[in-house]
Length: 117
View 1 (spheres, rainbow, N blue to C red):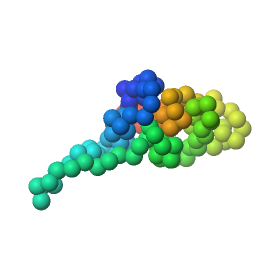
View 2 (view 1 turned 180 degrees about the vertical axis):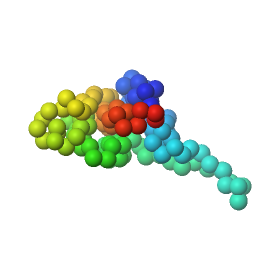
View 3 (view 1 turned 120 degrees about the vertical axis):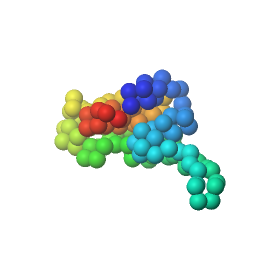
View 4 (view 1 turned 30 degrees about the vertical axis):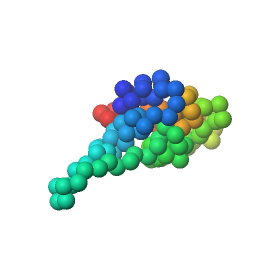
């Protein structure tokens, strides 16, 4: 996960390869497949995490809340920290776009509960 976070921190815009890497990390499922029954091959299209704030929001760990600013900053924290404007227990990140910033903050939050990802 740290490799993906570093790539997100350095990317200059939306990136389909990063979307695919995030999909594989979170779901544990590959994007390419082959059907043994019918012999076809294909690809599942991952969500556009680095493009869409809605898609990036799906990465926020359960029980946490997220906020995004127009300056490209994203916050992922526990609800009580959010409402008190105390983000010391959360993650406030910047990125090339608000969606990318949210991906970074959400994946860093996942490190707390799933450090082995």
